[in-house]
Length: 435
Image: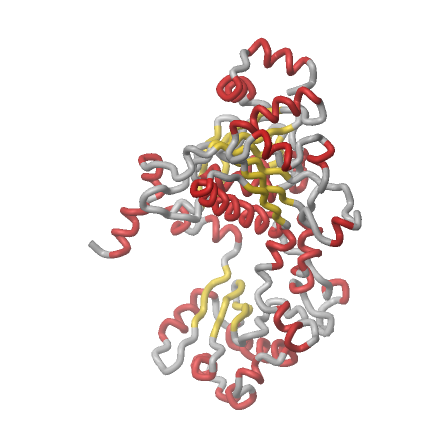
């Protein structure tokens, strides 16, 4: 059997339902509010089989209203629907003393609690880490917020008592400075030459991923020691940890590395070029590979003009070199450029690839075969095209069971199952504004 066939047989996403779930005995209470970092953290755990109970106030999580261009399905933003996947949704008013009493009952049974309230908010509700640890010594409490739970900014009370916003995290991390067109590129309008936030909520997703990773480490430690612990996650710090060399460049040189748009400060060519029908990616940055690239486009003069890697990584040369290469690439379609590159058999290694438009990505059969993109029919919100699960595993693969539930949809199920409440008592709590 060919390796590709064996790999597909071992990790086929279509067989996931037939296999055990790695975290099937884990109970997670997610009381995050207005934060996709918290939502993403619990989503990852839910994909691997954890029983995740998303606790919302009776009016719903404000994150349900984070709708791009006001696009909702029923009463919920499309982004929230995807991050509600595999979770049970209940309501509980933590502002009410009875609501906090019920939450303590839930925390007693839980393995993990995820929260994203402003620093000090849980303490003001008498739900501090010390209190929760007394209730459940094995509990893992994961707190996620821009500035974390300690440090100068927190101690000096300089932290605004607001929710954790992704755009703030991006700015605090220093990442926004690395994205966009540099000031000295005067060919571009002045208003475009500014620090630029990433298009998606990258800080929240980085923070959520780091939180899920830390929770897994705490779970392993807890199995050995029998002890829980408090995890303090800053999405700004999580994103900062992904900033590959800007920090180190400053340390070594004392100067801030400038933004370089689509160029790569460590290598050229390693960027995008215009073709007749779109954009292509081309790489060929080591000396022999640069020579190969120049041979393909019949421009030996560029080898003489930019002979070393130091010449080619001089930011002043990025645009002139790109314009010279584009004299060739603009004459061909993306498909023709790929064919030209594949036909090259000379010395050196240079590669080219299509930059897919969104519709082309969504029509790429490869992603559907691997279940990286899935058309999923949800009983509450209808059919959605959603991201699949990146991890393909032979023994305990993650899976997608459902997308989201309406606010409080699982109140009767969860409160009866975990706390033994009967429907009449649940209805009474609802009438009192507690759930």
